[in-house]
Image 1 (cartoon, rainbow, N blue to C red):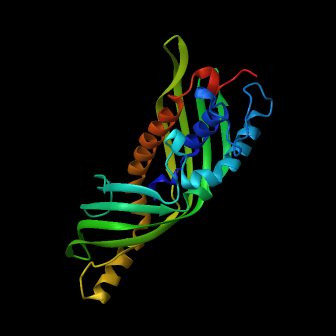
Image 2 (tube, one colour):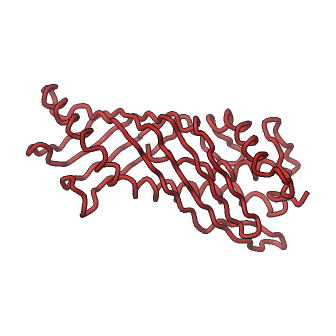
Image 3 (cartoon, one colour):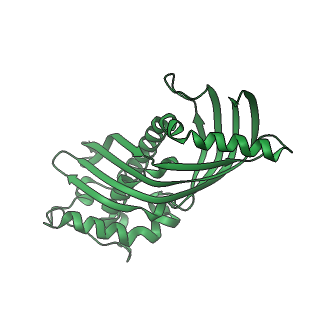
Length: 256
């Protein structure tokens, strides 16, 4: 659910890296559309390249250590409400969460400023479905709940904006780009989640508590938004640097 953000800048870095993947005489794969730095239609070219890459992004690109998006696997999610939240205090953990639908992203905007090594992107993901395991400790409807079990859910109309900032550094007489900071801002419009095994053999009470959880989805979105933003920022920054460390600046951004 939280990388809904989705990976627009990780995708952008992948396009730029693959487009000049000539190190060690590596041939440019047929699914890559190469974009020139001075191309007046650079942004449309990058968008086309991403569309060409979509099938590979679903399964992953091992040669650049890019994981697949389907499913997007999250080993752990730690959720704790902020102090000014109207939700009761609780502790919730998600384990081995698989999110599906991330690769169905729609690109709204891409900006690339190669003079300042700044990249911006905005995307939308219509639906993300997820499943995994949960642990929760909370009071709901005046009832203390401490449970664990399976969870399923979905979130719709996920919108994300991201800014990636880097600098040029010298290594072995060659210029390389290293990214220092990634800022991600994710907006979730709605979600639905179902927690199984909340009260063991009492399905009526379990259903009532699940309804109460989903009835407070706007408050819950406020709680999880900082977690989503921070997690997506750290993950995409790592992916971007993992890709670009294999190539010089001139390989990644050829003048012509």
